[in-house]
Length: 193
Image 1: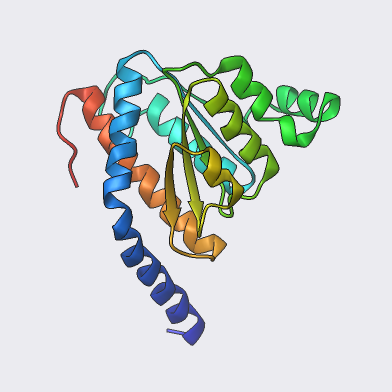
Image 2: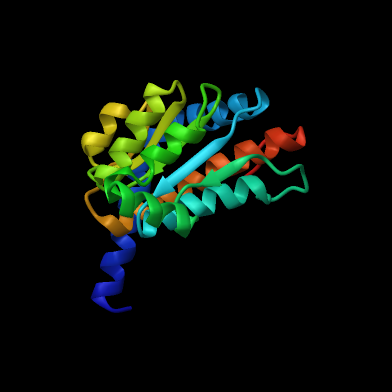
């Protein structure tokens, strides 16, 4: 194995081990999502670039399924409507592309989940602020200290790393754990490994 590849794998393992400190927080967010869905809430996800892909991934697991055949759960990824995104960016600003959607759609029983590696994207920060102002529960998937987005997150899953790729790898792990919890709840089962 090349030294470069071994370093990448070692870094991944080190960050995964450090992320175990978030176990209780991950469980809390999974339980929160189940509780809000049980009350008729909707999960809204968002992010830019690779984080937009993570947001879509989580919404897909909720609407589709993770492992079990069960009812579809209400989830929307705010970055997937190109017409709305470009309309808001053109008429207002790119900073407003998510916050205007959150203001229009999110209600107090809903959950707004933002993915960002740095927590510094102005459009993500604005969306979380809009979610809190509207009474929705806000969740931040980020790294490091969570940046300015942390201020507007009711719950923050902060990967203990500054490496974009390691943060995104842990975001996938965490969204899979939450998907398993929600999937099991929706099917009336206990989560499994």
